[in-house]
Image 1 (cartoon, rainbow, N blue to C red):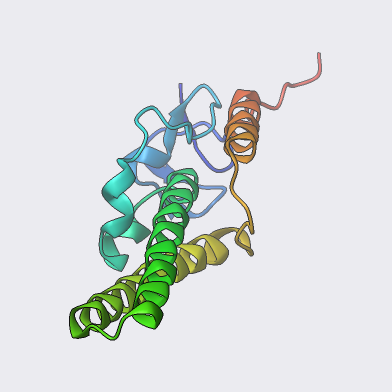
Image 2 (cartoon, rainbow, N blue to C red; image 1 turned 180 degrees about the horizontal axis):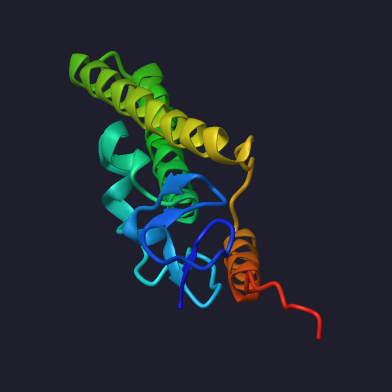
Length: 158
């Protein structure tokens, strides 16, 4: 039986009378199941470089993975900036200054990308995690799986 992915009500077509709306195909479920939000294919580590419009299309869990990647990249660029500062202080080479300027712009771009992903996540869940560890991501995935297993079925009394 087809059911609404929001309230679990049985459907005869794509309109849910309880929710008072026509459902998109991805919101029509079977037998009271909830929509599946478990990642089957992880985003590519380079996906964090996509445009804001493209990033908005990713699921929240995918964005959490991408935020981890974006922060890692930003940290690497920051370390290059520090090395550049040290090199400039030891020599007054104009090539080093140009390289330092390049690292500054890369760091600024990386920081803005992190902010974009953080703000998309914040719009969805009300905050963005300060630290994203493998344990955090695993725990988040487990919570998704647990909520997925609870069907939306109201049993009638006998």
